[in-house]
Image: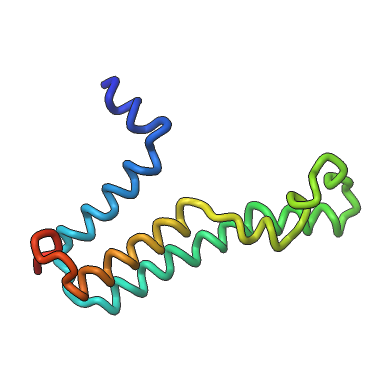
Length: 114
């Protein structure tokens, strides 16, 4: 039980990435195009999340006249900086897209066997 709590704690992101790549390796799907489209959707969903949890609340606060930017640095109050924050979804999308490309190019036949 302690191992579950440990893996769900600080190393949760690397464990998540390892399991996503493991599921890609053992997937029955062989066509690259649908897999690549799915990975691009994961990547873009990270930016949608940045917009919904960062840009939209800040924009709403500014339009309603709420002064929340006084306690924020200039980087934190910039819409572009908030939107471009990299998170696990962007990293996962790019990493899995790279793994899909490596699988397509058969860079290592021992690992990426079809």
